[in-house]
Image 1 (tube, helix red, strand yellow):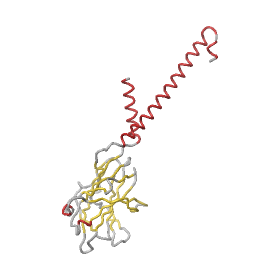
Image 2 (cartoon, one colour):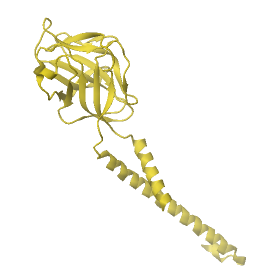
Image 3 (cartoon, one colour):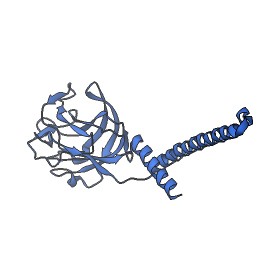
Image 4 (cartoon, one colour):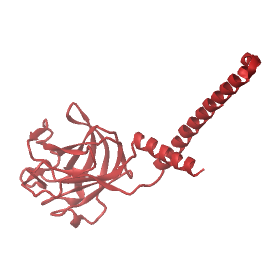
Length: 239
């Protein structure tokens, strides 16, 4: 602080400016620290809130073009891609035709590797009576409450059954309309895969399985930061 000793009061003036600037810089740093801490706390709090389930993506409103067959050892697969934010999936709704053994119908979530189903992540269960499956739109619920899926990542829904065969098949409805509705970035593949007794999955081009995937989208990191900044700005303005 040697500048404070200059003659004609110049030192005192310089000293006052220096101290004022130093205090403002310190106050700004303290304010930014509080913003960061409170934004993190707010983000963690929002993630613990049980948000209501929503339709993540669906094409069930599209009309059926035909039915596709599946039976034991010959599952069907439909791909979907997650939007720009992670989510948890808790249910899958399908449009069925005749089902040989309703209690044996299984729905599962698979990861993707090089554009093909890879590993099973978990299964979905129908909790209603067996009569609620054939020729209806049954909803299968995640067996472990929900499954976490990553943003901008492709997954697969597998549909299979215990029972049936080529001459006594199970049926799901498909659509030639490849449009879908849902949250930003979510989509269903334009085709589905079918198999024949464990053979390499074949592509049925332009005919996705009619389905609806439901769950809870997580708030994006950018949204959390923006919400935190807005709340702090409003709080500071009231002060």
